[in-house]
Length: 598
Image 1 (cartoon, rainbow, N blue to C red):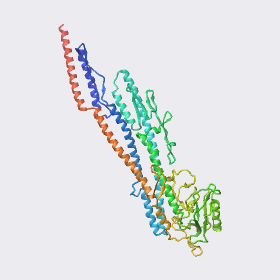
Image 2 (image 1 turned 180 degrees about the vertical axis):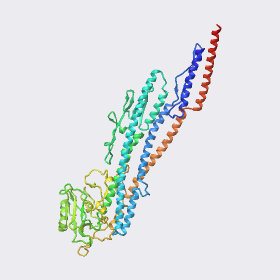
Image 3 (image 1 turned 30 degrees about the vertical axis):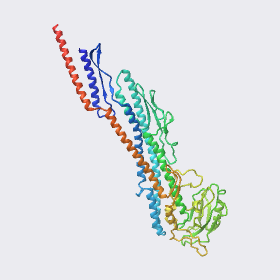
Image 4 (image 1 turned 120 degrees about the horizontal axis):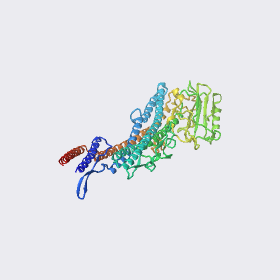
């Protein structure tokens, strides 16, 4: 009789201990409710007390796994939301003063002020200041894209460290479960820790999980590369780049490896997947779009600026195009170009200008330079410098050389390849407004990556705003019209204003396909496309996160501790325990009385 009572007390103690653990973990979202069943011991149809069964975990493995898989995508989208928000904040809104499109519109407005009074120094300075401000904004925008890529590298490094930490913890739990199984102990709490760690691991990358019959785990990447096996952990390795620039690609940046095997491209979700997309796709795409805009902005402005002259005219004009073989490279024009030495005090040609006719056939660059130099005589020189660039220098510091096409539309270079379709001055880059180092138009120089960071305004124009082209030199006969430049002539300014609205053929760049539109519209398209991507990603995140939260709530309701039920069970168990102890005490007293009576 006493054995039966003792077994009942021991069983109730196990039940109460489990219930107490449940209550103590009632607020722990990673804890699943545990139950202990009781079985009646029966021999020959006669009951001999009760025994507590092994602890059972109130878990739903399939639902838990579904929530874990969904959380991978949610964390991926959430991380991208942060990246897009930073980009949108930097790009500004089309209607405010910070955006690229608004800056283009502001330049036009400032140019119209100068158009009304081309000779006014204050208006000239205003245009130069606005242009310089916009150039610096474009430079900083490009730097921002690269800095954000470097920040993404930091994010990958931190995420890899966290993945390795979690894998070590999972490996330790595998060992703990093996020990518990060997001792006949329950492993429910260890499985809770497994689930919590797997959920945390899924924040960072997409993984596959295999549960063995022993309750140990195997974990691999989404493509099957081992991360955790019974033999131990294979940790991720990542070497962060020391810097990130426009020319850097996934091939040159940090790679994620496992035992020397590159698995970078196999990680497509979770935080790491989002950081990789930001670093390798989104931001390089933004850089490519801005590089494309920078190239077309530079070329549109330079094409018009080279058609005219400022006043005074610089005494030295240095071309931006480099000729490696000037004795072989040829050019030909479809019209006549006038070059003349102009006095910066009177605005007159100091002698009859040279009407350079290159329509008869191709001439070498050396031959063209020799013709110009022969015309200048004692009044100046034309020669190629050590870099192979054309330099025209007026002997008198108060004089300069003006160039103008004798036809409208402008006479263009027609030899296929090198600078085909450019006006004479633009072909050599003699009066460029914007510079980007080596010219990229048909020069045989590969790529345009990074133009955004190196765009600048010509230094002498920034220093002397009057050098900004505003007038077009006279094409009238010198004998009757010796005046070359009218200070009040604003025809070039009018042309520059019009260039902002002219349709430009943009090449495909980043996610933006090839298109023909104005500079202003393309600038706004950069913002618009980023805004659409950001909005779509955020909407998808909000939908997926709502579904995840609902599923997590449902899972918690099904698996977590029901406090009211547990307290009720505890009270019932305590009642049974108290009754059993009372009965055991009565049985003991009865035995003592029987012993005394004998």
